[in-house]
Image 1 (cartoon, rainbow, N blue to C red):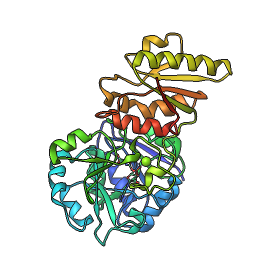
Image 2: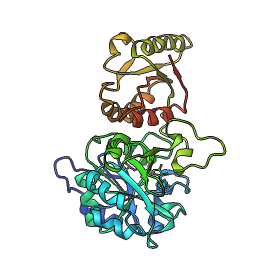
Image 3: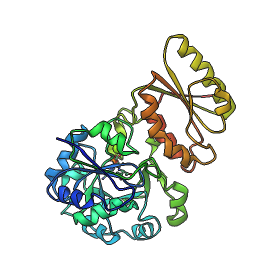
Image 4: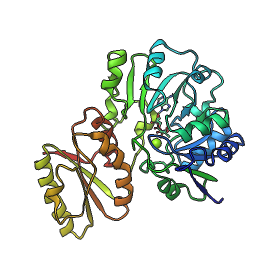
Length: 346
Ligand code: TXA
Ligand code: MG
């Protein structure tokens, strides 16, 4: 299969008519969102949804998110709309918040991986919204990477993973946030299953106490049942091995320099992912800045791109950790998983 790439940078609707037709016919289309690129199929067609799992190599017990273009469509997908959801939709939709609630009978089990709940989100990206509108169906879409790899934040990343496997990629340029949406379960007490750009602090300001799933910063215990099945799989792994050093920035940078020399003396190629604040400590080393520690959203925006691009050129990536507060929590959740939880504090 030949994979066509159509740029939507100048014209947001470019390729969305073709994309909508492909979706309606049961095919797959990769498209930009404000978080990461998605790999979409008709969310009401179980067979079409199965093609997503095939193209990604995704384990079929990991459920998908349904993407809608207007808020009221959530009524077709959930058994009913809980009160809390209304105020959350009004505050954060369209945008990077996914909500989970009991599914309506019409939602196929292929989407929910057999669960009685379904995840729904309304993206803010204009191309994404036009594609969904024109398709006239909710679009089931995971991140458009091969399973286990870092999520794609550019069309080039999607092409690297999906070339020849899907007919169409809509190229909207780099994604604004660079990490996937916040996943909030509204079944029982509101609980964040995956942190994102809509932070716990932002949610609590609107609905009061919100819990964090324990596995957000920790590997899942052997016998623990994953609240979100996606948590139990290897994630975001670049080609290189990743090790994270947390702690006061100057001390972390010092430790990273020491580790860098040690790896290099073993003949390994090393890259450092530092921050604006510590870049001067890495003069003459192969170092890249993730962004500004005081604005963790900048770290999120660059993380997956650097893991992919730098990861293909070196054996080892040494990365700085930051405080897991505000969007720093989303950053640390992805970084620690990319490292397979290889980390230390200084
Ligand atoms: O930003 C995003 O959310 C992107 C863009 C494309 O919208 N999509 C995305 O999808 O990240 P995916 O499939 O890579 O991640 C969905 C996460 C997985 O961890 C999955 O286990 C969880 O949401 N999830 C989906 N439905 C669920 C459900 N019913 N119960 C618990 N977890 C669920
Ligand atoms: Mg994913």
